[in-house]
Length: 401
Image 1 (cartoon, rainbow, N blue to C red):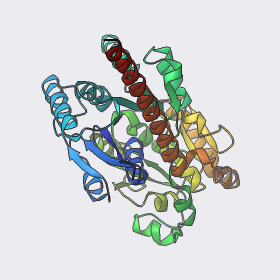
Image 2 (cartoon, helix red, strand yellow):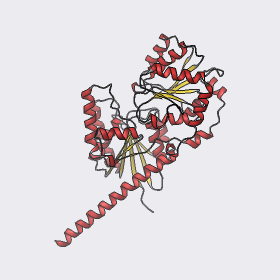
Image 3 (cartoon, rainbow, N blue to C red):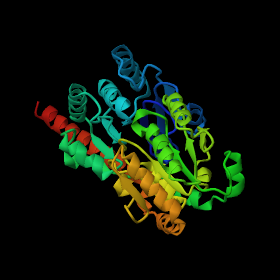
Image 4 (cartoon, rainbow, N blue to C red):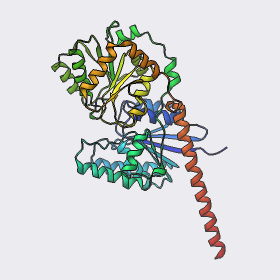
C-alpha cells in the first residue's frame, strides 16, 4: 500500500468566510487513501469546533498567530509553527489568508518542508492603507514568493495582480475557483414563509440581504446606507444582515440614526446560509476587495440575483446585466439604484436569478478539490524526480572516487 502524503493547511482564523470554508472543504474532501490532511489555525474562531469534528483531519491551533500586525506575536507564531511542522513532517504545506500566508510559508521553510503552496483568496493590500505599509506588504509577498513552490489564485484578477506586483512568476500560479457544493444546494427544499418568520421577517414583503463578517473589508456600513436610500425611496422591502464582527456596534448605531430599526434585521452568524438565500429577492455584497466572492456563487446557485461591488474576481462570477449588477466599491447610490430596479421589476429579478442557476463545473467543490489534488500530485512527482536525479548524480560521484 502506498504511504499517505501528509498535507498541512495553515489559516489565520477560522471564522465564517469564503477562504475559511474553502480550507475546511479541501481538508475534509481530500482522498483519504492518498493524503493525510492536517489543519492548523491561529487565533480562536467560530469554526474551530467544526474543524475539530472533521473526520480524518488532525487539527492544531497556534493562538499567537493573529490577524493584526503584532511583531511579538508574529515572531512567536513563526517559531511555534516551525516547531510544530518539524514534529508533523508534512511533505506539503498549503497556506491560506494573508498573515498565515507569510508566517506559515516562512515557518515551512525553516522546518525544511519540501513543497510550499499558497492560496490567494484576495490580497490584504488595499489603496486605503498608507503607501509605506503597502510597499512593505508587497515586498514581503515578493520575498516570500521566491521560495513558494506553487501559488493558487481563486480568481484570474488576483493572478494578474500578483504577477503585476512581481509576487510570483506567471508559470508558478494557477487559477482554481473556490467551489461550493452545487448539488447539495440544488437539493435544498425550503418553506420560505416559515423561514422568513423564523428570521423575524414578514413573509409577504420582499427581502434584501447581505451575508458577510462585519469587518472593514466588507464595508457593512455601506449596506446600511444603501438600505436607507432604498427605504427613503418608498420601497416596502425589508433588510437582513447575516454575520457578526468588530463593526456590529457601528452598524447598530447607524441603523438607529437612520431610523431603520423596523425594517433592518440582524441575524448574527448562521449555518443555514442556503436556506436564508432562498428567502432573498436580492443579494447584496458591499466589499472593498475580495478574491472571488464564494457567496456570489451560493446566491446565484439559489437563483437569487446579485447586486455587488466590482472588485477583483467578482466579474468572473457575476455578469453585469445578466445574472446581477456590479458597481464601483463605495458607490452606495448606485447600489441602491440597482436594488430598487430589481424590486420594481420582479420579473427581471426572476430572469436574472434563473440565469444564475446554471453554474459552470469549475465552481463545484468536487472540481476544486480534484484540481488541488492534481497540483499536489504533480509537485510530488517533480520532487521525486529531482531526488532521483540527485541520488544518481551522487552515486556517479561516489563511483568515480
